[in-house]
Image (tube, rainbow, N blue to C red; front, side, top):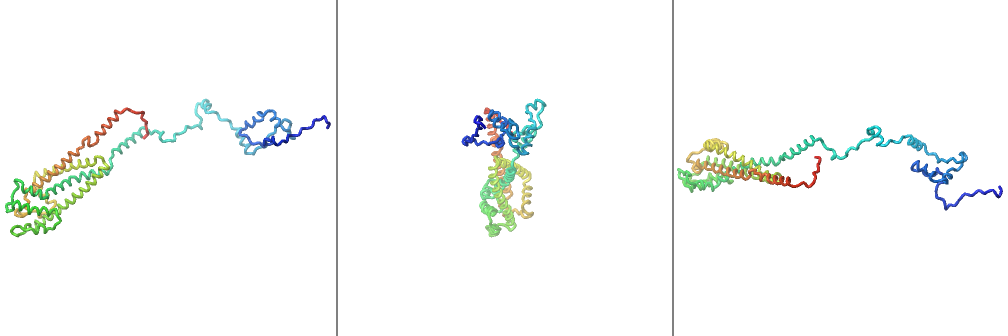
Length: 381
């Protein structure tokens, strides 16, 4: 080698200029796409191309050095990606075939609110809803029926209680036209002895309460048969008073229940009860007017055994309570019941105001006259 021969340049071994890049291309990390990797040598310029054409013993000068071969699975995936044709655009497919591709499907709505039922189904549901709204609960209706049934019985018991009192006895003995006793009882005697009989019907005393009474000559005032009959009458009277008290309590419970659960339920129950009461009392009054003797006899046969309630004219019970007394008592009972039922009928008559139709009508008219504030939003029921 002569001095004129140029010396080979030593490679740059300055470590400070090392960019920490790998020495070979196959040591570089894979790029995200093949196109960017292919474009990188071209964009790097001639210097990068020259550096990538390092001569090798098995390659010709100028031949690019390829990277290290990839794995078999990667090569197959790359070949499959190259072999698969690019799918045509949706617009091109529709324009070419005139129909949508099979793989396309419109997304179904996921909310039930977007599905409108058929019109007949909507009408059926609305009809069922209106029918269910019209059907009233069973509890209030039962209490209304019970109140209507109890009402006439309560009025009848209260009227009987008013008659079986010393006040009615005094009014009856002192009224003009009341028949006197042809066997010697004065009005004061009748009032005294009759008060004992009336008090016995409402107290808890035994038969000796009447059996121990004596008249002016020292004999028994009431016979044993009369005392036995008064004991039977007392049992019927006390039973009716007890039943009336029980029905009053149940009626109060029904009224309290209806006041909370049914608007106008108390009024409807009492209105129906007044109608039932008027029908019963008018029917009984007609029967009593047509034949009082038959009515009186059949009434006693219902509650007393045959032969236990008939007495002679000279017996004390007949002298104290003659036939006119029972006629007047029946008239007073019927009059009290009729008056109370009629008053209840008038006070509970279903007028528009009591039924609440007046307020509803006014509210409806106000809603009709009020202007619409905005478009109505239709909802699916």
